[in-house]
Image (cartoon, rainbow, N blue to C red; front, side, top):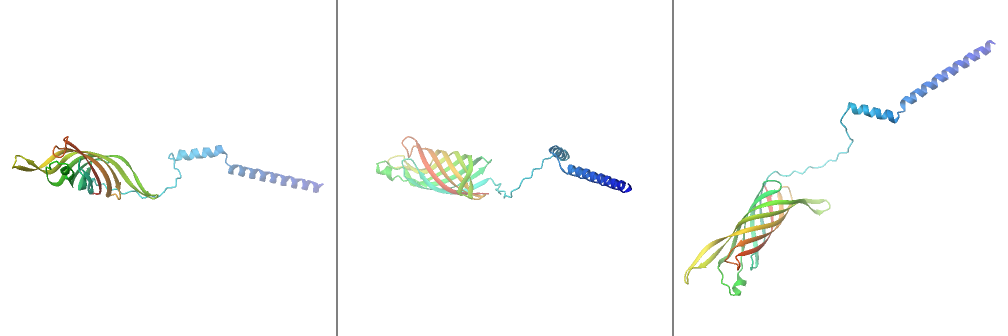
Length: 243
């Protein structure tokens, strides 16, 4: 009888210990497992502690373009100039520009070319020119209308600008005027000139550019035209430098 009582108490003790161990294991596992609600609550607590959202973004390294801040530009150009009713001749000159803003600039240019009156003299017209030299001086206002890029290859591109210019100036050439049957007056005649131009500029570097420009020069003169106005076409290709 005593043996049965001891066995009973031993079995009861083992059952109580095993029950306590199972309850403790279940409690630990339930604490480790987080429900969606508990996760949201935890994130909300973290946001309250740190009100600024800090996204994890992979940053890329890049080189910032170092553009010069100089707004003065000086350049030279060559091209072709066609005076109305005359053949096209070689054109050369220089320009100085001041960029008031990123869009607006003013430009002063001077150019020289020649006239060929062979066609007019062959038709029987008397030439009033002493020589074939012609000079042009213009002050223009320019506007950078379109900013873009010129792509040379897949990985090689240059910044570019499409611009327009409007200007006033003068065109000068040496003429001779017959005063009488025996007297001839020699003078340099300055004629009012209106300029309308369209150009395309490409930045090879931040301080050097190349450009192509087309201009129409309306010259008010009665010496070389029949109606008093001459529409003259000019094409120029040049380089300019910022300083």
